[in-house]
Image 1 (cartoon, rainbow, N blue to C red):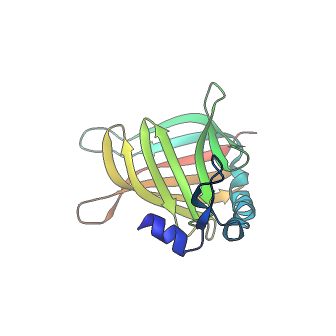
Image 2 (image 1 turned 30 degrees about the vertical axis):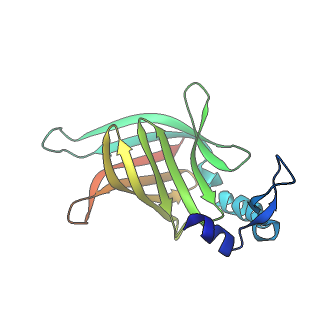
Length: 183
């Protein structure tokens, strides 16, 4: 069980409560977590190339219900939340947390929290300029198992392909996004 695992792994130990030092509660083991902020900071450097303004194309295939189309637009990414997140910058300037590295699990985390809702994970991280995220996603009311396959083509160009798992367990193409840095 979760709490038992946190204590047996050494991440947590018993210690004084911050609210009431006379009360023994579960606290982080300082020795076990001392290197985690540095690990996270180091891993976040792997994604700093994405900071800036980008032009984008979203290529969507034809289905029985729609013709194929390509949408275009632009977007901006920043580093926010004390350098712990890659954020999407909304048109009004708000920074919306999108990608982070969890030093406890050593997974990359991709989240969407507006219109589409989900938390996708990457256990393997970056390999050969590629990273894959997967997990449950609810896109405009439709929930499915989702995979995003990102590819950094250069410091000025990247793309990702979205796929969903079908009933047979195969990954099926949804769409793809291509980003070009604006100069």
